[in-house]
Length: 156
Image 1 (cartoon, rainbow, N blue to C red):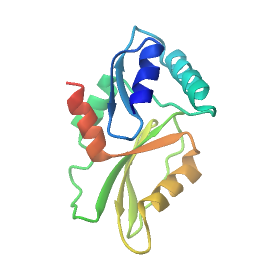
Image 2: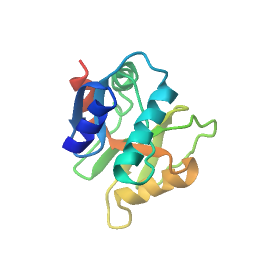
Image 3: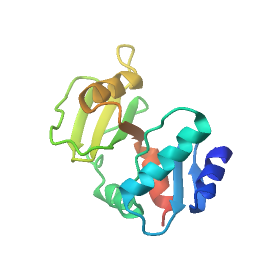
């Protein structure tokens, strides 16, 4: 994560912080258009790593608004419950409707999907993410709700 932080600083990002070991990077920048910023970061990552990496950028306001909405407020959880937010790179007009004993999508917007996975011997967390990737494509990234809340708190 230190190399990732240094790469962001090298391309002009300020106040760079990485969050956990999950590829989440918090930074400040001038008012660049989001697509231009995304391309800049993707080019730098590809140059550093030697292969293309899709980058999904969300603003501080978008993350904080998501947490304020509390999409999982009505979900009863236990030690086997996993709450996920999947961020879509490309807004999707088609919304996936899934509800099973182990995996359900509880809400969607054109840029994110909120899902609940109940861990069990028949379905692991990667199975749920594969379902989402099959529908929305590989340009999607999923984060545990706890990580999203942590990021929102760091942005205050």
